[in-house]
Amino acid sequence: REAGAVAGTRHAKNPILLARKILEDSPHVILSGDGADEFAREKGLELVDQSYYDTPRRRKALDRILEQSKKDKYGTVGAVALDKEGNLAAGTSTGGMTNKSYGRIGDSPIVGAGTYADNRTCAVSCTGHGEYFIRAAVAYDVSARMAYSGESVEQAAETIIQHTLKDFGGSGGLIALDREGNFAMPFNTSGMYRGFHLSDGRTGIKIFADE
Ligand code: ASP
Image (tube, rainbow, N blue to C red; front, side, top):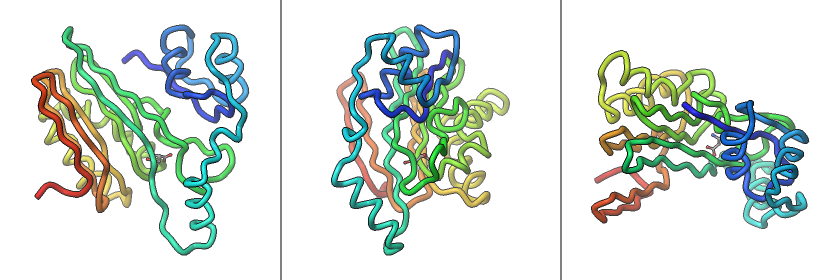
């Protein structure tokens, strides 16, 4: 339940490193906008011009959405991890939904919505339509179901994505890991890029549903 988050940064080259710095070195949990960039400067993190974020791929995605010829896509990167001491961690980084309003903040930096980790239960990172993940407190709900109902990480994650979120009208998925190393990666969209790496060397990468 240690946490650090950043929203609306315009110059931090790696917002996830800034979020980590806020966790380690600030009395606050979330910094936004100019204040976040100022904190990054004070801490000596790498800053870039805004044009750094303007990639041809993202520009094309925006143009396509503006033309209304294609549905929105999500592009978040998330990770959950368990170390050998039993510590759970989650990280989520995103440019947010394409064609969002200026100033809009999604679920990724909201602790308990798009990202959450508690050593007593699980680590969770989400992707999808952020507004629904915030309103349903999705990441925290996985942890709460495990703590209060004794559900496994697989049961809790599955129920939330396939029932709670879906019935509410929200699309997306999540990755979740418990302190024994059990994990779940449910989604209610057509696919979700995902992978795992276990300490015994097993790995896996998938996009669509399990066969
Ligand atoms: N969850 C992100 C948001 O709403 C979007 C994504 O997952 O790509 O900002």
